[in-house]
Length: 570
Image (cartoon, rainbow, N blue to C red; front, side, top):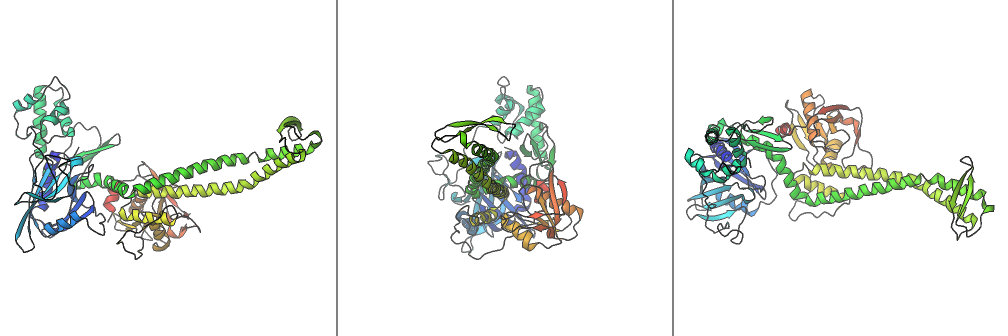
């Protein structure tokens, strides 16, 4: 993982600058794995994100403002009791470990000093956040409970003694000698990067590969030289000296806090480690949260789309059948013209087709029917198919409209927050796709949809509908006629409005980019986006939520840029 002990070493410096001697003003727990602490120091407030997510565990300053649940979880309420108003005395990384210790001084209920430690363990699926009473070394509580049955060495439950993870026999890379390095490595065994990870504390596979790459032909001398060179770079790039960078290789993204030579890809640099992590994780974490909140909706939409697509297939097959209508009419007329040649009980008759140069045509007959009734049955089939054509075409159009609607909701879920998901759930209930039960304790008072707010680089307000309720409200009620409206061309996506009747080109481009990002084409290199005035956008009577038609548009071709979109978000 990129967030290894060396990365945490650099991050500790970044956190300490504003965190040490800072006061904890507020604590939120927006999601089950995440805490946000508001830290104030030197009249400046910053948000500290601590995540124990099994895939996205990290600690950083963040500009993201997630929505908080109406009722805070018990762990959050306990932390507020112990930590709100307290001072962070120090932030320390345990040597070469992915464990951070916050030493905190607060006050108890009678005003006496109370000393606690908050331990943050960044260890993949074993990540945790634990509050410890320093005097007793007893766990007050932790964000994930681990019973003795789960781990006999470390019990992580309220009242248990806090025990650090078991020590290993790995060497400390900042203290080793050349002889110790070579003594631990077997050059004949190969897989040198794995040997480095197994023998030296704090090394991730990413950093080990960098050492092996710099060593070149992998002699004892070259490897030792590369080892100390990389350790020197770690020390050199701490705090403000870090050069956070990110890259993508074959759809796999990664990052580190200084440039790596073995990475053969174009990299993007960031101002600091926290900005890098915001860019790298926010979208991924949001999609994961949406999956947690909306996995039932995802399944519902998948099933409904499959059902509708199968319905289209059957309707189109029926439409193909209707093309045979004229054949049935001709067969009925030929039978009528040849009634004198037919008798009850015949299985078929061959007649001359006067519609096709008198070629022979064999027509199947029902042995139970009279000649006249056989002719009439073909006319009946003809009439039935003729009547079905318009009905089938109408059903195909309605089903295609439903598919477009369901795909739009499916696309919106991918970039939704918890409140957006709740609005989508209500919308699907209103459309008859599911039954909606309002959560106990939730507000009964109806609230207006709240489109998401962005600010362009030149200061104009851009509003974005994150679901169809917001789209309808934004376009049909909130936006003014002479304001500019945007939507990805011919695909599901958000409605986007610049609140200006004379926007500059930069704002237009950024609004189009936002519309492309919040659409089904967000991963495409070039996306066509239509822009027009709001007065040219109309919602047909009886149309599905979010559906509009428009004209007088200009098409802009843009490339979705997640980094820029997040920067423009208020």
